[in-house]
Image (cartoon, rainbow, N blue to C red; front, side, top):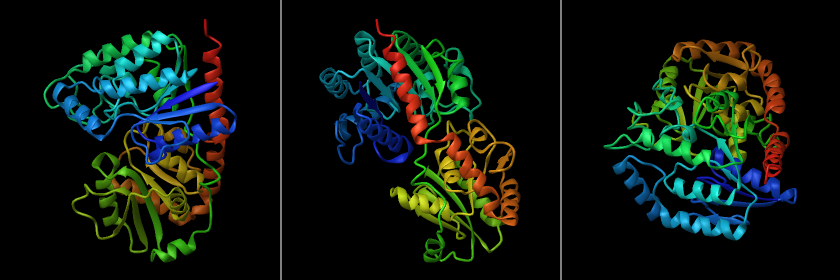
Length: 406
């Protein structure tokens, strides 16, 4: 069996790590695995780089002017299709395609014409909306019917002038309907249920498979030396991690929380903080950390992990914190309750996103000690996010699609 994964990144960030881990796992099992993406720091074995920076920037510019994303990069996509013709994969696994590097109609028409078994992983909602990766914050359900009059036109990949969401959703519906062997995998039951109400509802397979965690790298450990080296040996550490610290990720809530916490508490934020104009003096901003082992140590060092994000298709940072035996305080919405559970054994869910509510639950954990929640959190992570078990579920889907050939 030959499998080709296509994703916006490889190795970095959560989807890039997932792509790499599945690639390496398949190779270890004797499966011919290939990867194609535009952002390759180093070319992996059986790797193909899509396009170049000039093409990506031109695609992004045209997207903003025309209001249509995923309709450009024709030469880069032609190169990818030539590569696919050379490799002749049995399965194409599509992840994030909305980073201005793929001509979606060209790719999906090719897949349909060649009758290649195809898996979509829903790391977000872009595959079944006109343009949105998230829609909870703007309280929109237009994607269930036709999109149009988009309330998030200027969000994400913005359209400066035109609303083409009705046309783009109609195109996606038509294109995906021509792929005979299509499996849709949601990384949470929440996004899987929404996909089942969308243009993807008639897919051959619709199934939830949680993102896995490398439980051998993310695990509880003694991090007193790290804590001491950071000058926090006597502090109760509250950790937050995001790709970039923007209002949607809760940066304002962390600032409000810092005003409430006693002096023996310390907030530590990991992620791009370049857009944080007024940094709070009581918060440590560590910036982007690419070293996975250091990230795992920071999770394990923390006494509590806080995630106030309103919409999480999965919430890998929450799952990684649990794997490291760190309790969680998070917003009670979308996929997060599936991860944390609602019985209070792994931490707490917050119904109303304000700093006072987070403050009270953080103090509850501080009073009862991290270990009260941490052992249960680790056990739940082992049950839900097993790398071996969840990768095998993907391999089972590949086989099911291949058995439908004919």
